[in-house]
Image 1 (cartoon, rainbow, N blue to C red):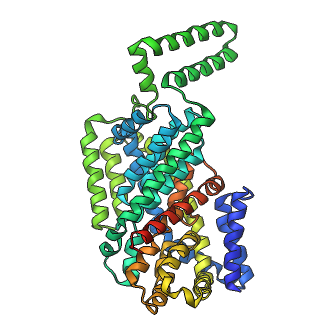
Image 2: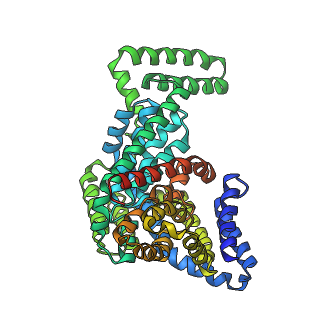
Image 3: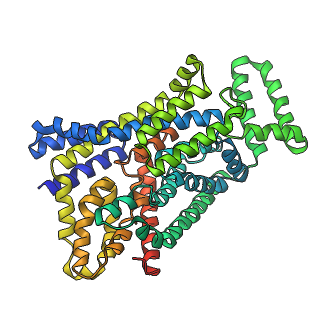
Length: 472
């Protein structure tokens, strides 16, 4: 019964948010509370929720201060050179922009933190998507898939969990998987190209000049409505100047290129004199995070306090920066604590354990010698419907025992368990995905409908490559 109710709870949640009948926060709180009553354990709801909040509180704290830290770093211009390089490659071509999104997300994912990746990627690419009227779910989907492949890095989490659960060395799991993961990343880039071509066909091919002139025309038309007939003539003159300048004037073209940079190159928050301090601080922070010098929430808390104090020594300026990022902080932390209700009920009522046991029991005995393949396939739904901790510490050891009985090595099982990560990074139980959809102003249901099929296909490509290379 718990197994059926567990699957029913997850299905109800996904259907309601995808049909936009409930907001994700409301669904994450109300649906598990209702099913907790159905299970007959409504009296224990408070304990389950507090246990879930306790488990996720460090994650919420990390996200809060990471958003402030990287938000301020974006404000002061730390990532401007990277952004300019990507945008120079992208120009106003939808295909290049989508590919650039995947490349940028993959590069930034080297730090091992999904929230950081999504904050930087969305901040850089969002203005381009908005200006060209491109699909924002393409941006969130491509970024999530690229980050999902890179999330298998030893310091990203899943590999370390698999190594811990099966008492293996993380490098023995990850290094042989590199060829298959590279194939998966290449597939994401190819898929980005295909999606970009589709966007190009839908929107047409524009130049920077055409996009900017169109924007100026729209602005002038707005002014015409507000000001009257006198503004109309000025608008037409300005439009003609824009076209002429774009075609023949190097100065005007440079100005237009500056206008198209995504991040305002003249914003008041820039701190060019502190660029190398901020760069070294960020490198030091990421190094300390990888080396586990201190818990990640503590590192970001210290980093946020330091970067605010050094870059904005005046208290009103610090308050202004915190206020500028308060909406993202509130949205993401609120979503994390709401997710704590969902995970708390799933674990507290025993639904997760029963679902995992059922999945293992339904595997036919004849599949024993192919348990690595089975594990790879199961990693798609299981890492999507439950946390990485639940899968790697609760399910993987059981699967590994079943595999060992048929001569399948724990290393193969551990590698196969990493296959589902591109889909996992869009799971409603992953806090970072709310950073992605929140900053991109995309409905979680729309993101889910778009990304699930492509992310699942990416997982299967990695699994196929792993089998072809004899890794799994």
